Length: 93
Image (cartoon, rainbow, N blue to C red; front, top):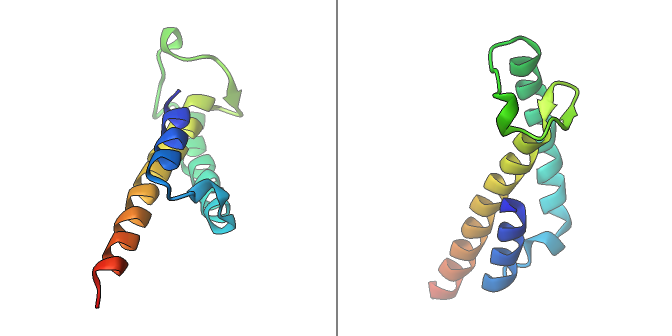
């Protein structure tokens, strides 16, 4: 749901970030780092999730919600950054 809202936000403000190849490269790096660090935290019981609040779909020990939320959060920030950067370029003389 959150990731769909980010995609709609991207289409609304017309950054077209999901059409750019470097964005998927960036997301793969974020996915790998999430897998590495979150995997460590969940493999050892440092982070414990309430079973009533998750879908029980895991990639190894990591709930799928962590990946989706992390990618949505990073994507949202990059969309805003891209929009502000393009706006700043228009203002320069």
